[in-house]
Image 1 (tube, rainbow, N blue to C red):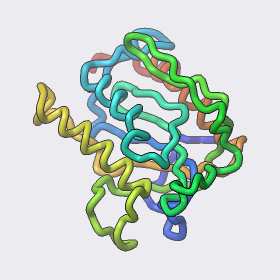
Image 2 (cartoon, rainbow, N blue to C red; image 1 turned 90 degrees about the vertical axis):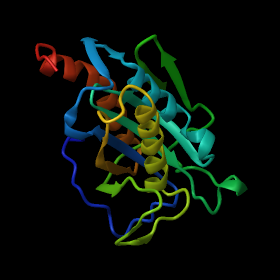
Image 3 (cartoon, helix red, strand yellow; image 1 turned 180 degrees about the vertical axis):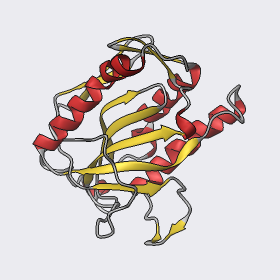
Length: 214
């Protein structure tokens, strides 16, 4: 499955506040490599900004209790991540995540000084391609964004990283691409494909860009 080919349209008939799993890609504007650099086929050396983007991603479930994180990677100029979003209207009633997710096993974070990824025993999937704006309070063409919906989650994450950057040495230098990309995960096969894509991303980057100066 080609996760690199993503369209810039939200799926009109999909309710982004309901239980679903997503493969997310968020890019730094103009492709600037401000999060770090690849120093080997398996290691991304993160800058302070990259470490902050990593830290804030890990903390998403602390702010949205209906979200469960899966595989993710911080790359030099973008991040990929899989998140499972429970139904906001039901999460206080212990409404289960999609049936192909093993919440009891969950994801185990593996951390080195410079690289974080997950060794996940969960198995999920990916389907349609969409994107949404990153403004959590904006009323878009499909109406108000529901509290706790995917756009709100990602919008608040992006805003948190941007605020940190503006308060530190990256002020005026860092900004996100105005949109993010998502693909809906529907089954185990698609999830495994997404997890594999994320795990292999550092090696692919190394092979393609290791001789380039950024």
